Image (tube, rainbow, N blue to C red; front, side):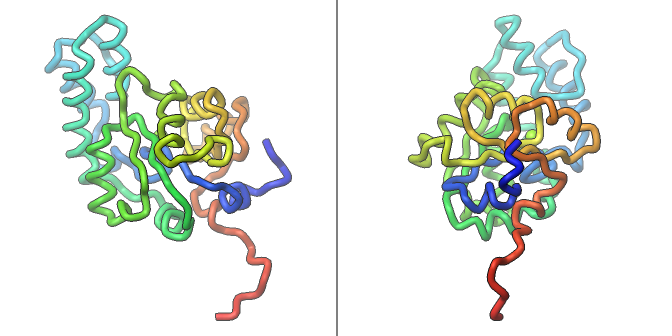
Length: 218
Ligand SMILES: [Mg+2]
């Protein structure tokens, strides 16, 4: 933890902003059932796995030397449909519109699904780089974070990453990028307290709520 700097100051002093997608930007499965999607895709590929998380299917396919690329595409297709009913995370629009420096999305969701949602939400103009799922290098692998910084032409140490899972925290730690952990469910604050996060927040609003040093003139 860096008690000297508030979460909003961390963001204000960063050169680039890296955002996980599901959680910090939107709730991908707000209008759909991830367990049902996981079941349907597992059945279509004859995978013997029971999980509520469609992303677990990729790990399973990798472990059994299964059809990873086909599964990745099938899941991306499902995600493209799913984001049609995703809900925007409160505060993210203000953060993205006011940040004023380069922004990248770094996600384990399929790139086409992310781009579909960004375009529909008209936030695509504020996002310079989208790093979606490489099924062989999913977070907590640090590679997607490094790739995002490379594409932005920046050092990871000058960026801040906002994520909402322990896999995000592990990836950030491995990559050497400060992470702001979004504890968007009550149990997550406890989860993140064991990770080396630069800050833990309950809401994205905390990242734009700097008290102005100078009084407003307008
Ligand atoms: Mg997430």
